[in-house]
Image (cartoon, rainbow, N blue to C red):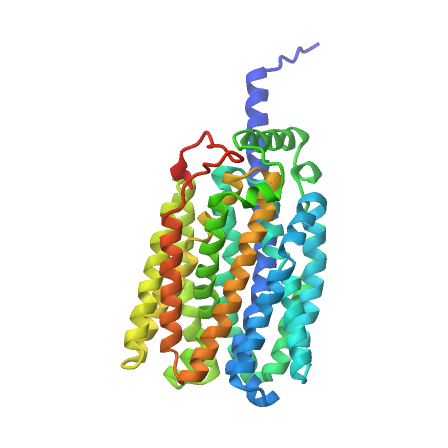
Amino acid sequence: MKTVIRNPAGDSLDQTARTQSEMRKRWLYILPAVFITYSLAYLDRTNYGFGAAAGLAQTLHISNSRSALLGALFFFGYFLFQIPGAAYARRKSARRLIFYALLSWGVLASLTGVIRNFWLLALDRLLLGAAESFILPAMLILLTNWFTRAERSRTNTILLLGNPVTLIWMSAATGYLIHALGWQMTFIVEGLPAVLWGFVWLVVIRDKPEDAAWMSKETRTQLSEQLEREQWLLPQVANIKSALRHPGVILLCVQYFFWSIGNYGFVLWLPSVIQKGAARGIAITGLLSAVPYVVAIVFMMLASHYSDRSFRRKRFIWPFLMMAGLCFLGSYFTAAHSFWWAYGFLVFAGSCVYAPFGPFFAIMPEMLSKNVAGEVTAVINSCGALGGFVGTWFVGLLAAHTGNSRAGFLFMSISLIIAGVIILCLRGPTNDTLTTLPIDVEAI
C-alpha cells in the first residue's frame, strides 16, 4: 500500500494562491457592477443639458431662467435624502437600496421625455434627484465593506469613472439620438436601461464578503479580519452628532460645496456653451463635449494610483482644483476673442475637476469609524448637492442675463480656487471626541 505524505508548506502555498485569486475576483465581481450602475445614474442625471441645448425650453415654451431652475431642481432633490439613505445602507442593505433606486430613477428619467407641463416636469426632476441621492453614499459604504485602505482610492476612482466615461459616450450617443429621434424620445430610451440593470444588480452583488458564494470560507474570514483590524486604528465615535462637530468634517462640507459649484455648472452647461461658441449642430456639440472627459480619465487613474501607493490624500486633491480654477479663469479671458482657446482651457479645467475624486472620498473612512463614516460622507455629498444646485442654477442665470458664458466661468473659477485653498488647510483630527489617529496626518 502506497503512503501519501502531505506537505504542509505546499498546502499553505496552495491556500495562499487560492486566497489571492479569490481576492482578485472582488475586482471582477464588484467593481464592474458598481461602475455600470453609477454610469447609468450619471447618464440620467446629465442628459438634461443636451435636452436643453436641443430645444427643450423652446418646445415647452419655458424661459431661460425656468430652464435653469429645472436643471437645478435635480440637486435639491439629491440633497434631501442622502443621510437617511446612507443610514439604511449601513444598517440594512446597500444592495437592496440601490436596486430600488435603479427602478425609480429609470422610470422618472423616462418621464422627462413624456411630461409637457412645467410644474410636473419640475416635480419629476426633483424626484429624480431624490432617487439618485442614495447611490453615491450607498456605493461608498459597499466598497468599504469589500476593499482595504490600500485599495480604497483606486476602487473609489473606478466607481467615479462612471462619471467621465459616461459623459464620453453619452455626449456622442445623446447628440446623435437627439438628432435622429428628438429630445423627448431620447430621454425615454436612455431611462429604460436603469430599470433592466436593476435586476442584474440584485443577482450579482452581495453586501459583505460573508454573503459571497464565490469566495471560500477562509478567504472571507481573512478579508473580514483585515477590514476589522483597520477599524481598530480609528477612534470610535458615539454618533453622527459627535462626528459632525469635528473641524475636519466641517471643512470638507464647505470645501465640497464650492468644488461642486464648478463641477456641476461645468457638466450641465458645457454643451450649450460649445454649441453657441462653435456654431455647430447638436451632434458635433456632443463630440466636442466628450474631449475633457477623455483627459479626465487619465488624470483620475494617475491620482488614485499614487494616492494609494503613498497613502497621501490631500496632496492629490488641492493642486488639481487650483489648476481647474485657473483654467476656468483662462477661459473667461479668452471666450470673447477665440472659441478654440476658450475651449482648450475648458478641456483642462474639466479634467482637473475630476482628477481628485478617488483620493477625496478615501478621506472619510480613514478619518472616522464605519459606524459614522457613511453618514458623514452623505452629509458632505449633500453639501455637494447644494453646490450643484447653486452652480447649475446660477451659471444658467448668468448666461441668461449676460447673453454669454464668461460670467459663469469666472464664478466657477473662484469657487474651485476656494475649494483648493480649503483642502490645503485640512488637518488631522484634533478634538477630544476624535483623538489623533495612529497614522501620519499627511495621509489625509
